Amino acid sequence: MNERKNIVSMRLADGDRTAVQAIAERLYIRESDVYRFAVKQLLSNMEAFLSPSHSGCDLLPLLLECREDLILHLGLKKNQLYNILNSGETNPEKYVSMSDVELLILPNASIRQQLMKLQDPPEKNIDTESWLKYYFAEKYFPCGSYHIDSA
Image 1 (spheres, rainbow, N blue to C red):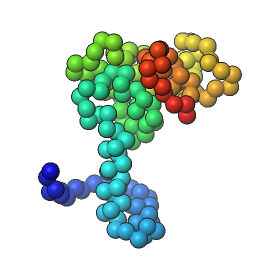
Image 2: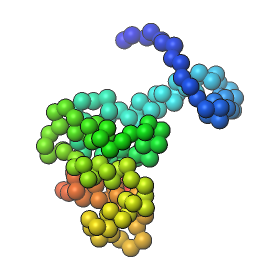
Image 3: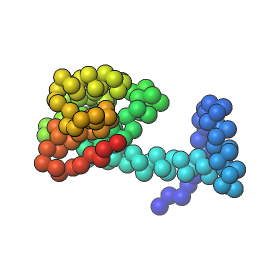
Image 4: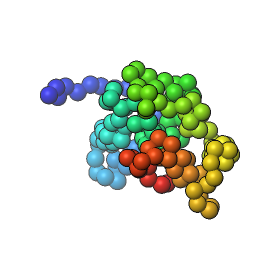
């Protein structure tokens, strides 16, 4: 295994850098250790994107967990998200429709309005995030072959 290390440069907002420094100080470690830890966590959490065999609805659980951060911090648009989900050799059974991709990028109030048009709420007073996860679980994993946890 290649143990070679690389130097990486990045721009951070002052508040983010201050927070990293505070964490490092509190844990009695170097700031660079916090950055390495953060990258390892990111890679672990987003492992499905590393495998070309994961496509279409395989990526929905991951996208549902981090959709707000991906849209906010990476600025992903619906066409980009559509291509991420349905690119390459996506099995037609795993294909995610554009209307469902649009649900992933809408704000919660708009998601709720769209879901009301598509189905009745599964339970009284369900929050929008849980309803969205339920909708995708029912549509793309109807036999219970995959369970998307509620928020």
